[in-house]
Amino acid sequence: MANSAFNATGISDFDAVRLAVASPEDILKWSYGEVLKPETINYRTQKPERDGLFCERIFGPVKDINPHDSKLKGVRSREAAVDKNGELVTKSIVRRERMGHIQLAVPVAHIWFMRGTPSAMSQLLGMTVRNIEKIVYFATYVILNVDETTRDQYLADLEAETDLARKAIKIRYEKMAEEDGADVKQLAKEQSREVEELEESYVGKRSQLESLNFGALISESEYRNLPEEYDELIEVGMGASAVKELLDKIELPKLIAELTEEVETAKGQRQKKLLKRLKMLESMESAGIKPSSLCMTVLPVIPPDLRPMVALSGGRFATSDLNDLYRRIINRNNRLKKLIELNAPEVIQRNEKRMLQEAVDALIDNSASRGRAVSSTGGRRSLKSLSDMLKGKQGRFRQNLLGKRVDYSG
Image 1 (cartoon, rainbow, N blue to C red):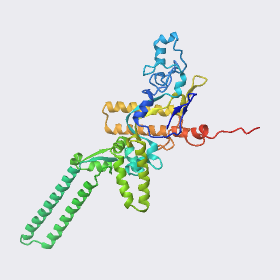
Image 2 (cartoon, one colour; image 1 turned 180 degrees about the vertical axis):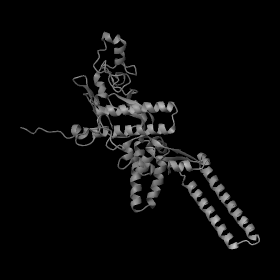
Image 3 (cartoon, rainbow, N blue to C red; image 1 turned 135 degrees about the vertical axis):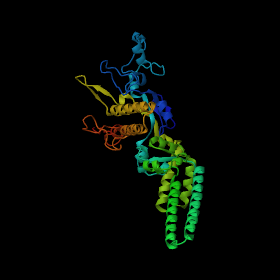
Image 4 (cartoon, helix red, strand yellow; image 1 turned 45 degrees about the vertical axis):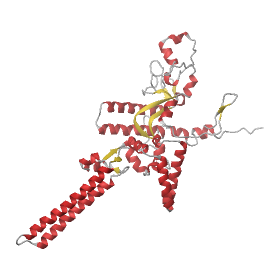
């Protein structure tokens, strides 16, 4: 928001609105408390569960409270009226504006910036969207760090070993050729075959070492087949936490300077691609957006009155789809925290991390999420995510904020 000011009626006046990526610090500033439980309303008392998705301490009271009411001396009523900052909240309308947050056990990639066109993550990292997805959904490893000094040492050692092996083969066959009755032609053939095999092995090992670069992808089978001594040479990672680490290492001014130099020499389609990438990087730098903010560590929870739960006849409830999507995230996040505490096997943790990523994807954009879209109980329809509530003819912008019917009668 630019040049914001309040007029006489107390309504905020502004000249422009700018949308930017929210950092974890921004989300925590908006939040009034952490949502820890997936529960919504207690089925017996019909009151919101504490630390749940409708918690009164986080989001404010369900009904207006009179601050002078003698009931406020009671513990239950007092807790409902006082939020986590110790402030007295008496108006129920605040449940339309107060936000909460979920502290994620591991970073999660934001689907808009991963799958959008053009993909912001793809432009930043210089990778294809498919390769980024492979990392995020735990299909492949990515190299996060390479010890260049150790690699140079390994290459020098490999060269020296190969030279020694060549000399040893030559000496051995020369001795064999000097023996009485030796078939010199046959020995020469065997020697050349052995040298050829040695050269093939050398070229293979050398190309393997040279391919271990920062940001390169490496499959699980390839990683397992690497020699044990390579463990100290490279550091690998998987999932959104690995992508976040790659984004953390990006220095925007340095990358912009490098790409500006490349653009001057590039031609045709390559130049167009570089210019698009450069434009996005410059925009991010001028807006002060950190590349690592494209991966979320804190998830905002929208106010409860924007995802209502309505009581029906017969003791049943009709609830917004968002509550189901948030519930899935909280359940998976809590389960992952327990698995990390118990130091569960890597395979189990990895599967739970992938499921958490998919749950957050479904909340943000269910139609674009990986695999099948999350459906309602019975699987009759896909749940409406945050993106579905904003986009299209029935979305918030076109339906409520923009075009209106005008009465021209008279």
